[in-house]
Amino acid sequence: MTLGGMRFGAWYFLPIGLGIAAVVASLLIVGGYRLRRATALLGDSVQVKSLFTFDATRRRGYKGVLLVLATLLAFFAAARPQFGKGERLVPRTNLDVVLVLDFSKSMFAQDVQPSRIFRAKIEIERLVKALRGARFGAVAFAGDAMSFPLTADGAAVAQFLRQLSPNDMPVGGTAIARALNHGRDLLARDPRSAEHERVVVLVTDGEDLEGNPVEVARQLGEGKTTVHVVQIGGRTPERIPEIAPDGSVQGYRTTPDGHAMTTALSAEGEQQLLDIATAGGGQLVRAEKGTTGIDTITAALRKKMVTELGERVENVYADVFHYPLALALLLLLLEAFWPEAPKRTFTRPVPPPRRPRGLRALREERRDG
Image (cartoon, rainbow, N blue to C red; front, side):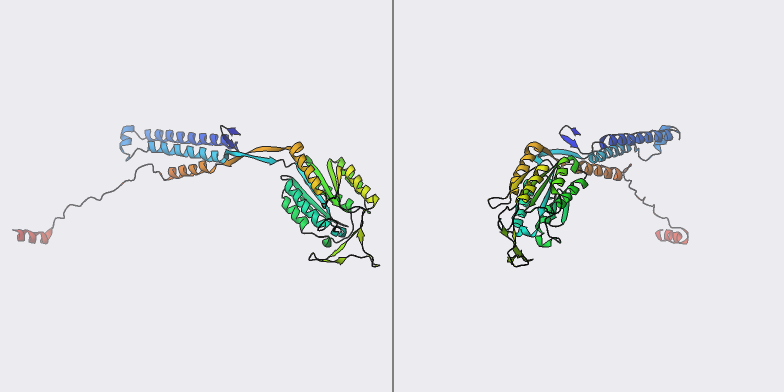
């Protein structure tokens, strides 16, 4: 509710305060009327008033006005008055993005410097910063998946992915279907997500040989959730480094027979990733020029937020409720400590000189004579 240049965050307290102030004023008026009536029953009003040391009628009236004003100001403060302070540009928060990042050991490959997984984390942090106002969730997966629920704190999601490593995954592999199911569950469990634009960003360098990720992507697309796919790596074989817990390279992984272990997408794997993006109504982006391709998805989502979802200009208001509240407290204190009659001062009368009596008085009279 806006009144003049003032806005009220809880305007319904205004009529409540007016009603209660009217009740308080009515009770004070009725109390004064009954006091005058009771005084009149004692006898002649002139003679009765002559018995009073002070007529407190006017002071009671002033105290009543202070009480009514304090009541009005207290409810005025409860209505949360606010004054306009300026404007700010706020992106709409109706975009939910679930980041599904592959943490299989092949993501240690260094065809994208310094490594696929390291570069992916950097570009995901850029995505989070670029989409200011969106909500984020995350799924980290290899042979199994672990997730982070949707939150407006994008930095927390980026930190969740940053602190993980392919060495932390308890089960090896590339279970894309299982990871997409985790992402779908994150969106389904959030009550506000149904009203938002929903996007899943899958970042992977492999293919799923266990489940059916295309079918899961189709279900997401039918539920109005867009699935974008970022493909890292291609058909060119890349050696996989052996990374120690401290992040140092300890040579390269080898097969049990001693041959170099490499990672490369087959033609079927590339087609599977394309089918996932198509079924989810999104796009497939392939890594190139030393990047993973996440920046391309970031730019597309940023443009979507600005054009389709839109940014809005929001008025910024400053709360000023503490001013009427402080004034109400001051009036209550004044009403409480303002006496109905002025302070009376008493003076002790000077006693007359005592006259000596008896034998002592006779002796004094003889001495004086």
